[in-house]
Image (cartoon, rainbow, N blue to C red):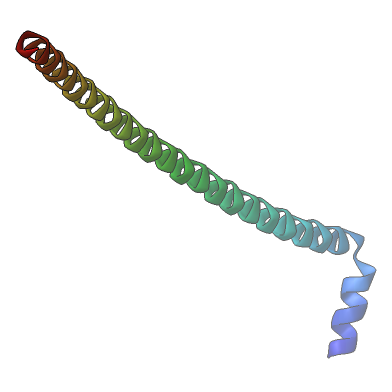
Length: 96
């Protein structure tokens, strides 16, 4: 029975072409599926990286605001210290 099937399939050129096109179509379909899965995975990775960059930017902005606040406090304290030193110098000059 197998001999009859192989000779029947080998004798029909349209069947050979149909099998070749079917097999090729399956391979093309698999390639497209794998390609789309890879493209989806890459897009998700890029989106995750973008989210990480946004989080890093927010953290940097917060740190910058904290740094500006610390700088302002330091300047205020330095100004108060200068005023205190100036008043002490004035008081010492008056005592002499």
